[in-house]
Image (tube, rainbow, N blue to C red; front, side, top):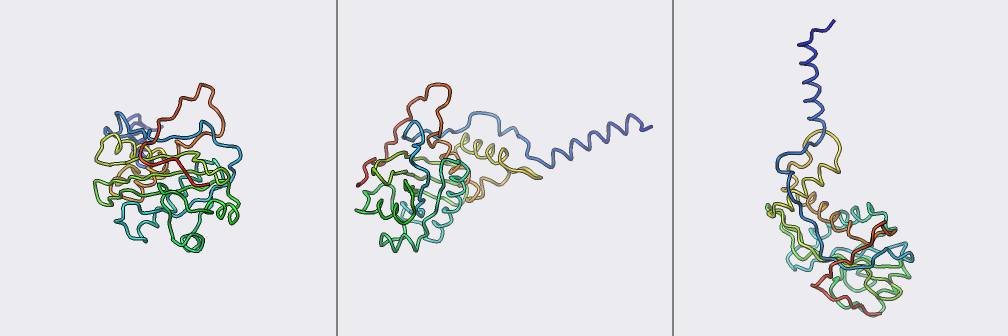
Length: 239
């Protein structure tokens, strides 16, 4: 028979081992978190949009190298795929250069004539998604701001858009990022640790936070409240 004192010791060891194998909340996790709200769009995801062409990330800040800007492409695409709103297909930079004469296009610009029709013909997509990086600070405190715009290739209308800034120096934003990391990670260790020193992991949090604001595919049980309007770029698109 195992002595009671040894049983207590074994139980305590098991608890410590379990704690070491998963992310656990810390005191910094408790409190308000940042919730992005500067978006505008349809109440529901249009049933006609089944495939979305994702254009290469555009540097709207004018301060990033093409190589650095391109790093955001796969992170953004990963966040989009997890939404299950549609089939998202990436348009490579060389392809964009061939089609439009430049490797990236800005979400805030008026669209060149024929752009939407070209994308629809070449990809079979019913919508085009733009992403502009407006600020990126890759050393602590990390900052990532961007705008994104979803446009129907048939009508030229903006289906959804958002414009946000994520600043890790803002305590509720940092708290939201750590909670996100702990809630979406498996394996040993504290997955919130070091996140605010990693531009890639911070971008993953920011992009996922924005993609949760995409229109839902089905209406919730309660009434849908109107989205807050985006104010920093126009909604018009050339047809």
